[in-house]
Amino acid sequence: QIWDTAIGQCLKTMIDGDNPAAVSHIKFSPNSKHILASTHDSTLRLWSYSYGKCLKTYTGHQNMSYCLFSAF
Image (cartoon, rainbow, N blue to C red; front, top):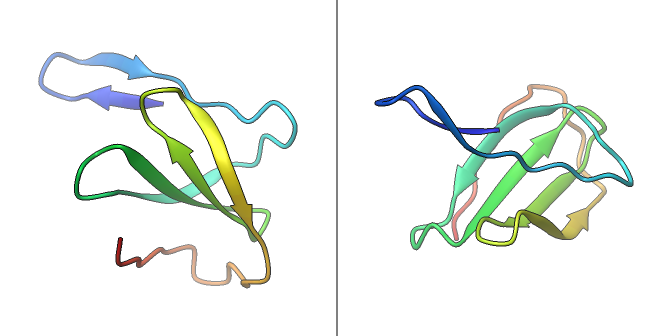
């Protein structure tokens, strides 16, 4: 879920119905159009913020430290 902490309201709920893995960290792209999320199933998922859809799933990393660094 994406929350506006100033007003305490949920702005958007983003769910991948095919594989709903718990998210450990996220990072917004500089233009706020995309979100990159690291998940507890050792995948990275690229989301469209406006559509609330997962655009691509990346595999092959080991999610040992449960953190995320990216350069959009």
